Amino acid sequence: MLEINLSALAHNYRYIRSKLNPNTKLLGVVKANGYGSESIAIAKKLESLGIDYLAVAYIQEGIILREEGVKVPILVLHPQVEQFNALIFNCLEPSLYSIRTLEAFIRAAKGNENYPIHLKINTGLNRLGFSAKDFKEVFKLLDSEKSLHVKGLLSHLAASDDPLERAFTQRQINLFKDCIQIFESTLGPIEIKHLLNTS
Image 1: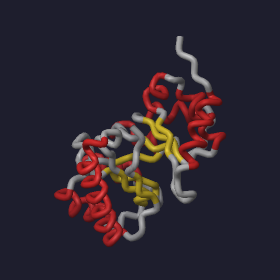
Image 2: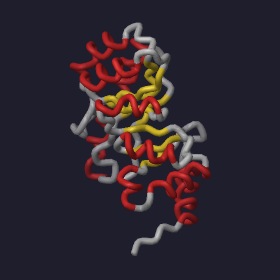
Image 3: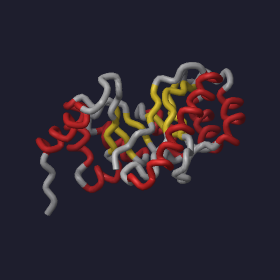
Image 4: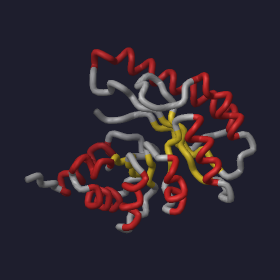
């Protein structure tokens, strides 16, 4: 039997917060039922502690949290195109990672104004994300698109816990910074830039 100690969770949360700049937002990943540790209880505890964001893998996971009364912003890391209307209805925020998902979300969001989206950049994990060859098309699709608001840019460090991969990690960070400059010079200021992840 697995027992989750919410007091220990609170201790860990406060410890991580103590290491961050006060202006740095903190996102708690509660996908896959909180990695098997009961996502609803974890999400509610993190929300009560003041977490800025939660993240789930799939839209249905976010819907369950909303149905349980979770109000904090929820990022959906792998939203499925056929469920975009449900995502919007439940005020979830998608991580869009390909031209196909961006085009589909533009269609789904018609009639909205400034719906928040996050764009995922591939900096080396090579799982999901826009690459430099996609940027021109991304900007073309977003040009004068009033239904969407690019709230965040994100990427994912592939080996944040491996000191032997420090040079690779630094290359990812530098590439992400370069991408931020490109996107902000075209789209204007972007509120949230999120890259750092714990191991």
